[in-house]
Image (cartoon, rainbow, N blue to C red):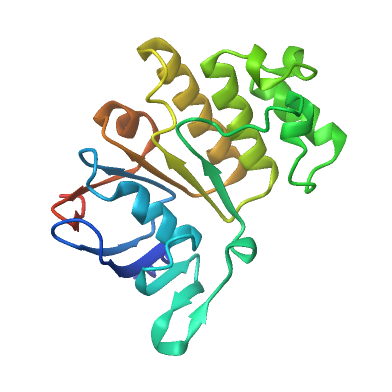
Length: 216
């Protein structure tokens, strides 16, 4: 008998926001997870709870066997110890830094790793530019590279492709999937777009009315 795969993500958190309030339960061994739901359903709040940014979250969060939050045991790992990679919808690059400096910001990578990642992401020719001189797709690729260069335990993607046109979002989403598989980095993508989930995810969950529904 083959032993069950260990859970990549195991959580049950309650957050008193919205009507009804959020009661989020998830246990999965999938390395690429999509959570799809309408705007305002609580998708970003779920990511904030995993990252440790949602102070109102009550319950537990375990990532790859490590307890990041367990209110019963009085465990709440601070944000900076969780090693989360975060790629938001608007990229949030530092405007005063070049692409090279944004990629190297975590301090966890060498100059060679920065250049190799830029090459894979097809932004190597932009390394000395500032974010204001990049297109939306280029900014998203830099944000992805910065997150991956921090060597995250898990990568959280908050509607990162919604500002891109369809051909570009398919290109960037496909690249995200390839890079994270190569690095064996788990992903949680939240989106209102089923097509993003189809490109990236092994497992699709739905969030509506404050409840997470597992795959059928």
